[in-house]
Length: 266
Image 1 (tube, rainbow, N blue to C red):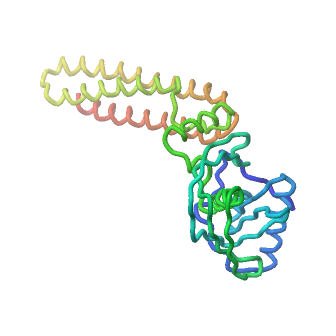
Image 2 (cartoon, rainbow, N blue to C red; image 1 turned 90 degrees about the vertical axis):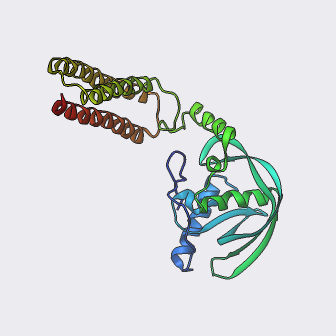
Image 3 (cartoon, rainbow, N blue to C red; image 1 turned 60 degrees about the horizontal axis):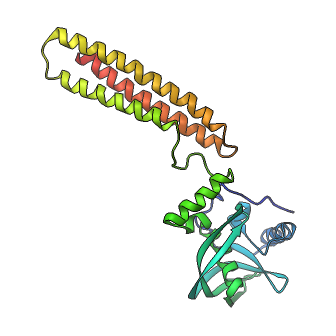
């Protein structure tokens, strides 16, 4: 049975694939399904986590046949090479990744028998790419610094980037303005503890009240405009909507706390 291959931004859900302990019919069926999925998508290799499975298993094509590697372990590596790579997890996006030129691997076959192999060149890189998924890694997690930033720009340009990834949004100005006025309210509140003049305290409360309306309005504008910005994205909008909701509720919570303390202080 052909399985769906997971693509970004949906997580594979795997941080560390546990070792396969039971070499049974259920495993055999999954291996055949994975092989059928790879063939249907014309892939040179496929890892179990790429279809949402916890099996510690990868398939890689060698001499036009799929090699089944269960519980693979890299026991030796040598040489370094920069590999320009693409993956089905990030469709149509490539990245330059530092890989080992030669690796030695131990693994088990579908019957639990142990094997070892030495891989070089492109075959070595293919194995490293597939084994990465068994540890929750992918092209994005392998990159750092400017290389990672450039890759994220490619994701955004292809409309694959997650909207909650830190970047500059027009909506941020509403929160910055809200925080500015909230700081003013806090300063006004603190200063009230050192003032005994009742008339002055009444005036300060009026300023505090008017400023609170401003903060409230800015948070409402933030929520409305954020959902407007959200329409530009076609992926990951649920987590983005939750982010908007969380920031708005946090802003209103802070405002409520400041106003309650102010009410009993002025």
